[in-house]
Length: 383
Ligand SMILES: *[C@@H]1O[C@H](CO)[C@@H](O)[C@H](O)[C@H]1NC(C)=O
Ligand SMILES: *[C@@H]1O[C@H](CO)[C@@H](O)[C@H](O)[C@H]1NC(C)=O
Ligand SMILES: *[C@@H]1O[C@H](CO)[C@@H](O)[C@H](O)[C@H]1NC(C)=O
Image (cartoon, rainbow, N blue to C red):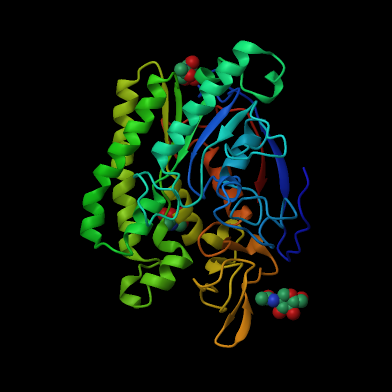
């Protein structure tokens, strides 16, 4: 695999680690296909394919050498998970051109999407319910094509992949983060059950449609994103010991508690299924709190941005964008070495951080049920 040159003074060792399947009751990580739903945390090009936005260099520079449709300098957590399952990267559902191959699955995630249905002022119209509807449209079209010809089989999931495939979810962050612009903390906390009812509704539709393996990421520490610190954390009393916005992390924690309870409930209800809850919040908070132990130097400051320390974030400029502000042109530039940074652009994580998170997920320790050391995976680990 091609890694971009990493000009780091810090020693970065990339090692291929092979962990063999143990014969104990392991999670079956042998999925023929993956169907992913979510927001920018796992959008591999949907928002860009939809024409809602453009991405500029240095997005993509670390791995793809050009903007790849991901809000990142390189790969996302979902890319590393696909890699671990020995599957190719997921093509976005909305990719109309470039011979998208959906044999190993399809990505319905779109950056900025929410669980709750979009409104006129939503940043993304592709809310969870729409993504689930797109999935059924995708499946029905494929079933229809396959009933007529075998010509496209190598581009399309086999019929039984819909039942045997892994259904992956990482959504909810925008429901919470977006709400802080117009609602109080109490209102936001009170809205969590409604968000999760909507989420459960989508899961139920997929289950009724034959899905049997669910893998659900909880939401990260939103309060640690430079975007939120810049907007809601200017008063130091609003920050916690890590320098993150307390209210945002409080909302994320309560959301996760209820999401976990929902997963427990689904585990009880869907006895013929595997429902795995993955605690991304703990992995990311640990990374931000103990960053130097994991080889990072900047836990909060954005790599690609403008304005310099402490956050290097300006909401007026997206990564790579140039604008004339107060009479002079300003560019949100990339840092010299993104592997030192946890935050890529103030809203999304760097490839290095995503790789760290993926490697932690794959230890199995952050899952319910856990699956420690029971999984075959090929993953580049960062030491
Ligand atoms: C759930 O996991 C168990 C243990 O790995 C496995 O035997 C079973 O086939 C899985 N069920 C489904 C529906 O994937
Ligand atoms: C940071 O590391 C310490 C020591 O391992 C651990 O106790 C603590 O929980 C970590 N911080 C976070 C936020 O995870
Ligand atoms: C980036 O590298 C250049 C050349 O080594 C150096 O002059 C500059 O100060 C560095 N910038 C940062 C932000 O570290």
